[in-house]
Length: 307
Length: 253
Image (tube, rainbow over all chains, first blue to last red; front, side, top):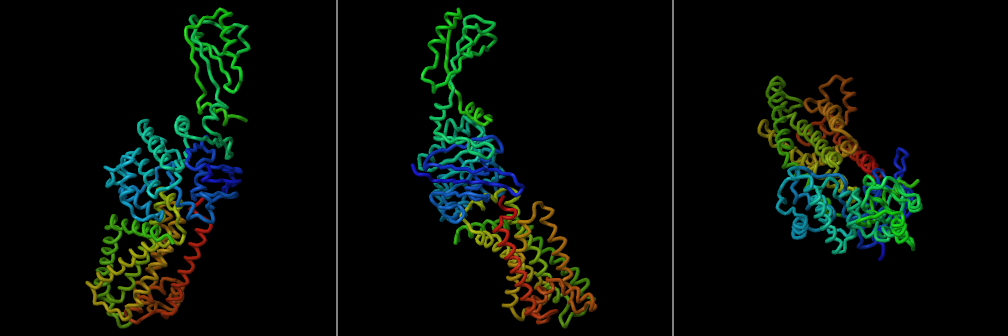
């Protein structure tokens, strides 16, 4: 797939001397959902702000569908819809008015049918004449999304779109995002909710201290870095792990009632067969076992904690 | 040129006028009427005429200018400051609009409101005193030029301000005193020569003088000088706005 956003050697240093981004290189593929993960202050919002035109870059080059964001900003920006992290709204404007304003600002002719569709898709139609100040936080968040979609963008940036949103609404938003992707929109998502990236993303990028730590296909990432855990539920409590099982680095938990074995899915041999044999030989009986895989959150934490 | 964007900003700003009708239109009209009652009726009855024009009639151009200056600054500064304050500026900065288009939208709307307000005040003045406009085209030229220039100045203040106090500071502490001391209620020629020389350093004198000339053909300074000073200030404001957008001052990190 060709890139729709290309970031080359991008750096950002603020007037204070603080370097927020260091030599970022990133390609966003057309039509994908890309999740950008990183702790607070990692540079996620700065990166998005530069691509969207809100902040100036210090060095490097960014193109959007081949258009340079600095020299050909009109063409570049007209392709982008942005939902910022904070709820910035015109409190006394109506929902219909503010969404129509956004469409006009992006140079698109009036299209009430499109605005109506966007508002209906986001369950805002019955609030179209309400002033924004009267809406709940979740509704305001959806108004922000409606504004970003008002000019039919090909790329949608969602900066922490579900922050402070309840579970039901979050799932509703995921549904909207999937529908947009099906319609060919490229989506770049930043989130603190790892399960959101795990649920939605095709690829994941991790940014930490202004540097891209990795960019990887989500499934590959899970496979490459994901640990699996085998948990044995013991028939009887044990006080300590027998010395003959020391080589497996087992963890004893649930007050001596559970043994956990961590293994690498990349390895050709997982060591499960020999472990089970050695456990039996050690006289330990178990009544059940289950396996689980590291979540993206575990992977993320291990990446950003790496020295 | 993104005409639709200019139109969207312009309409949005004009819509704010209707939402704040009392503050935008009614309040300045009431204030001006009070000026007429106090200065025109109470004080004016003791001043027979100024340079052949009755005092009540004489102060009309100054009063219109007072409102146009302050309202142009207030409208434009608030128009751009508010999106910065509530954060909606992100949309403006991420939209495919040029700096010129942004200025055109905001300053155009602010100037329109001031011009309409100036004309309403003029009409209100007509209820109190007999009006005569010798040069209506020049009157409109001065009105439009002043409204645009000071809307541009207000736009700069709105960008510069990082709090409501700063937003009010220059209009309250600089522009209003300069307007009062710029010959709104008197002819500069009535002042002792020392004060007169000092007053001529006040740029507002030239605006009011030119505007008054278009009404009654009386002026404190030559009309050409009035236009030159106004255009110079306009050019200064345009350079400042160009610099603001070029550097992203107080707009972009």
